[in-house]
Image (tube, rainbow, N blue to C red; front, side, top):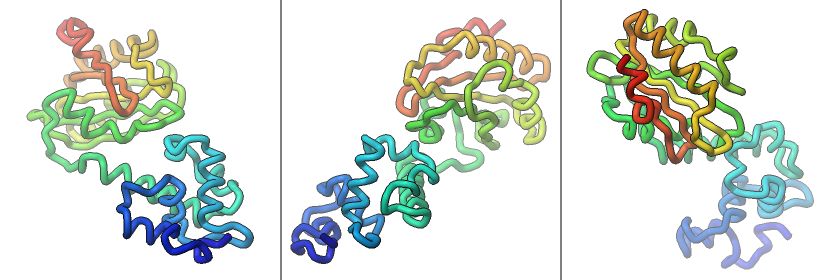
Length: 228
């Protein structure tokens, strides 16, 4: 059945107007984003296909464009539309990141940058560069994938720090498993960055491990390593 053949009270857009966006089902919201169906499949059918294939609405944020476009009824254009809507939603709920914003605490850093690490299936490593007043100069994703001491080299971190004339840095990465306990690799990498920072004169302020919601702070747990 096409959406336009549904009773008016069951049409997603009309339901939104009548009951409010917060009262729509995931399928209804996806139907509105999709706008129209394809031959033999209404927008609602496609929305239900997507939810069935991804198993959970939370998994929709981790699916790639190729995988999404291969779901029956989706295709490249609708996949692009869905991914754009997801990214826009992330940006609406995250802090606006602007140069010179003050990042004076680990809580504040996590509030600002945690949205980069929500629902990821692989590790992502970010460096955040600060001036003498702990205000943001810039930030950069340096590594994506399985993170260990082979893939992460302090040289890459400090090359960028020198380019932007940073006075200090914070590094941040995620654990897709949601277990925030630092691995041996995490500990080794952190010590390497601390030592290089002391030599170059651009200290590491903290290394934060996150799952997008909660975090672990190396500075809070291993304070002596930063003070040596």
